[in-house]
Image 1 (cartoon, one colour):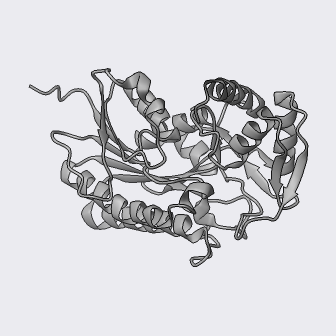
Image 2: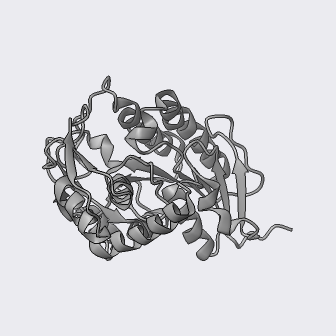
Image 3: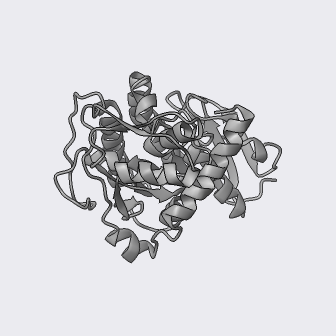
Length: 320
């Protein structure tokens, strides 16, 4: 007989950077975890330590196809999607499909199972924002036909579909608008600022800063992010919630900090800013603080140190 007292959670994109950390947290919380990933950008290395655990099941599958899971499912966390520009610019159609078809399939399963559904959305729904810091009431400034539109609009559509299932079908849903996150299990060739700066510095290469480096980002260490996600999942909130760190800094400052942390002799070089690259990025954390009792705790410097140690080990092994 199945154990109905044990919560069962499905994590799509569970072999990815955030998805794998989420699988760890859910297993630690006593969940039976089903990890579904087509390994488009996810990696088996991220979940290798969970293979063989009776509370964990990996299914190699593309969630844009029909999704069926036998037995009860209490929570569905939809994290499947390329998430860095280097990935979604290489995989534009796949990115749009997983944001639309994949979200539709996952929501259909949540409806069928009576499961709570959490959508991993993104600060990119705000585009290149005209409001600063960004709060959840801001509708965004997105170029739908620009090169980044494949990701931005996929997530905006996913949010609209999630709310439609909530309002029309009564599905219990929540939306996490995730801001820049970093930590172990990021790929060294991920293309985002922190892994790019770290891998370049560790290799003694020039550190590439786009534009003049004055554009800002707010970066959150992965352990803090996962705590915020878990609190949102186990809440009764349905409206979008920003999950991130409001500590804003320039990209140039971040590059200099990483060079200093790694002890590298790399020099900074500047290249043209990519199309539609946001000039500012900072979450308004009022909603998360007041409704979830959550805010990040781990200082950026400590998070960067842990990430640096992971990158050292990874590059020494010759894996990415």
